[in-house]
Length: 238
Image 1 (tube, rainbow, N blue to C red):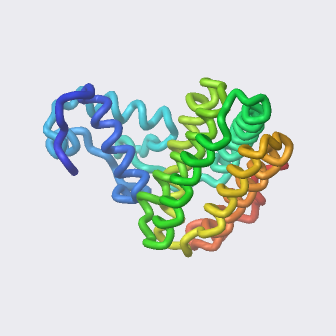
Image 2: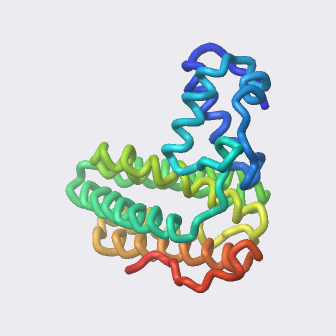
């Protein structure tokens, strides 16, 4: 782990570093997180580590392990479905509002196209290179951009908690699955619907995208031995 620098608070820096470690799979499920060891590795006192761990627990990324303190839990398919259901609603709303703003000429189509296409091109390049960290970062960047151009500032902040959980899921799957080229094709279709000002189509494509992403991730997880005994269908409900 890299040691902390000065600009952000130490607790915030510790949180971000530990979040990255968990989402990137550097801290496997079941691994106990020892405050003293983390404080030594990051070069800080125990207090910012305590604050960071408490925040990660609140995000659902850590859980109490009897006799071992906090650890990274196994992925929970039911919880994953719940996050995706909320994300589906938020993404559909964002896409619809963004398309309406294009139709109303509140947004310039060329500006939206240029920025969105740059992200899509970078995402497709990351897939070609099998750069997992960049795939996740750019996926989040694309959806965050749609949240921004929706004009509703509450969508991004509401989605943030769900993205933190799903970022870990995405990282886990992308490290052992085929690169998802279709995801970026779907992103491009969503962008084109928004830029054309077609709110209904943008809404429908956003829903289709989330349902497909959820089902693909669930299929990968249930194929793993960790979930071989799970028979519950946990895809996003339409």
